[in-house]
Length: 186
Image (cartoon, rainbow, N blue to C red; front, top):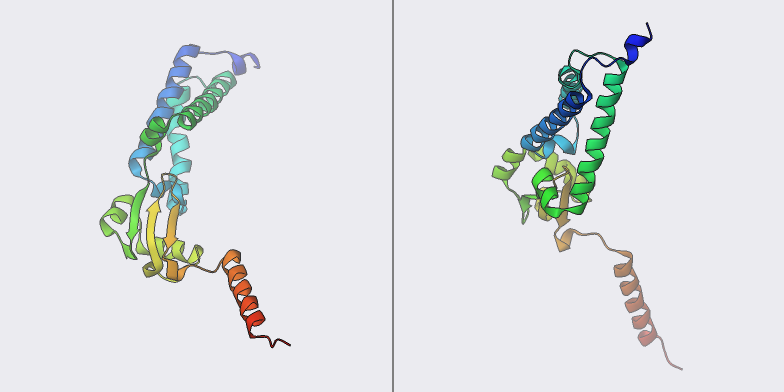
C-alpha cells in the first residue's frame, strides 16, 4: 500500500516540463488580463483562483497521482517562481515584459476613461483610491497611475495636500518671529 504512494508512473523530466509549461501559461494569462486583476480580489476572482487550481492540476500531475508526483510538481512550482522573481528583480527589461508598466488613469483631475476601460477600472475604484489617499474627489488629483502590481498611486494637487510637520514648523517659526517683533521693547 505505501509503495504506491512513492512510485513514479511518469518520468521526472515530463513532470518538470508539465509544471513549467502550466506556470508559464498562467503567468501569460494573468499578464494578458491586466493589472486590475492583481489590485484587489473580489468574489469572482476568488472563484476563478479556486477553479484554476483544480483545472491545471491534471495538466501538472497527468495520470500519476502519487505523493512523489505532487511533491515534484509543488517543488517545481516554488522553484520556478523563485527563479522568475529573482530574474524580474535583476532585470528591468524582464520586469517590464512580465509585469508591464504604469498606466495613467487620471490627468489634472480628469479620469482617462479609455485607459480605465482598458484596465477594467470603474470610476468607483478611482473614487475609493482618492478617499484612501486623503483626497475628497477625483478633481483633487493632479495625476494618477495604475501600477503593474495593481495599486492606484495618486498625486494630489498642491492645493489639496495636507500640511506636513515641516509646514507646521515653518508657520510656527514665522509666528514666533512676528511675536518677537510685536513685543514691546523696554
